[in-house]
Image 1 (cartoon, chains in turn brown, green):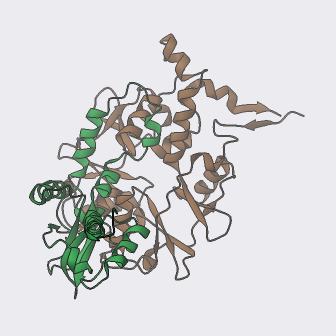
Image 2: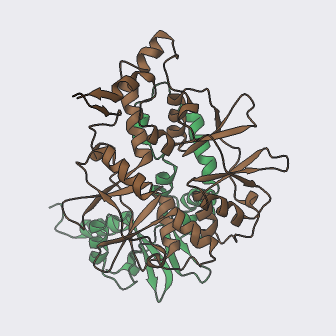
Length: 294
Length: 160
């Protein structure tokens, strides 16, 4: 009997090929202020919290700090008071697909990579790292990206609209920051679109903007417009996925808002996480290879 | 010879709420005023207590794109415009967001060889000198080196 097994470009690749080797760790008695400092300085999404014996005991993410900001906690609060426990791990020789599956099951955006012993944490594994790997794969693939470019044909290449999340979450720019946090908390998005009185895009607030505001002593009652990033970075849904990813990677942004013919009509979001979940390369040459018969 | 003998009494400081843009300007003006390259500054609170250190390295680390390892594989890339964009994002960041808070200090009475030991083992270019919580000076690696070198070259048996 022939069975069909689903494969992706990432099949067979190991965690160690995509992981980042920088682990930000702080002890549980350190303050949120110190945690924010480390998250911003090292551009990390979460930090590993350790106990008195320096063993990993929890995780504090930007989302956790955002919740502390919303709840009115002071920045002097200890990391141990808000951390999620226990930390979730994967292994350097584990298949990327298995790691992605674990991230999906636990609804987290990263895993810590465990070394030879349970206390040895040697890296982090997150969606944006996988996008980097996918980009590398596509840029060297002779079947897809390069051949299509050489032949001047984009027909078989994936478009942004195929990988994006086809809706957006938004809040009014004049509304309090707390409202933007509520909108963010209700979804698994990393940023909220802010709109002006006419309902047009005015700016964006990301979780990074929120933890910076918290660190700077801003109150959640202040208008969201005071801390938003502007202009809204966007692309067309018909743009090539590879081009959009390239732009996101080199501009150091986590997401593009996606518009149609009218740049002021935002229809979706393409985040690095979306691109990682797409799990294919950036052209249709990968699709046939995703199904193989055993 | 002790820290007090080689420390620099002239130093510039930053405040935690200063913007990184202001810190860059301060680094430049400190270098101008002291006639030497200043690679990092002390950060003090409203009571002049040391709360952190901000170095050029901290700022460069932040400006550097996160996915820089992939850049080498991107052809026809013009970094000029992108770098301007990065600098724009830095404007919203304050000194306290990037400063190092793992502080190593010495007192004016710390022996110079202890200072050298700290600098070598912890790869430090500068060490704040703190007396009863108050910053009283800073010791640069170059100051230590030339102070010791002068001592050695002044000895009668050197070079004979």
